[in-house]
Length: 122
Image 1 (tube, one colour):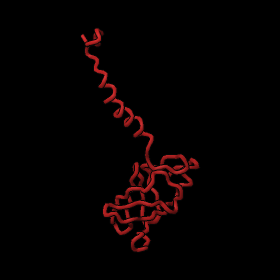
Image 2 (spheres, helix red, strand yellow):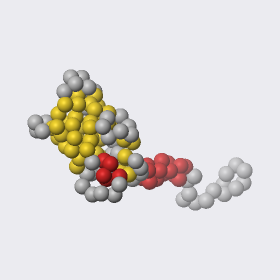
Image 3 (cartoon, helix red, strand yellow):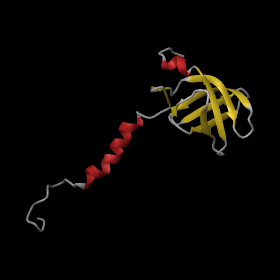
Image 4 (tube, helix red, strand yellow):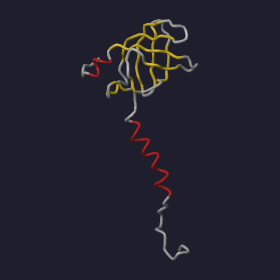
């Protein structure tokens, strides 16, 4: 019995639901995130375009696959970049800004995002 005379419910700890709330929220919202263009998710689809190093200014032909807040970029030379998007919402497919693990910045120019948002498949 508590000091105020009320009896707590057995087996019910009021703190447990509070601990689970952030986990539940995380599970629900994980599916809502990912790279988007014009309100449509663009994850897990291969796109073609160019990667431009903002450090050197050089352009590299590349294929790009978006995965949540990452862009997996395969350069024509065989080099692979795992870039972190500056913003998951793509405003301009000609200028998608992202950074590599060495914190070097890249600008991606992606072909085909317009067709995907209009319902065409790749």
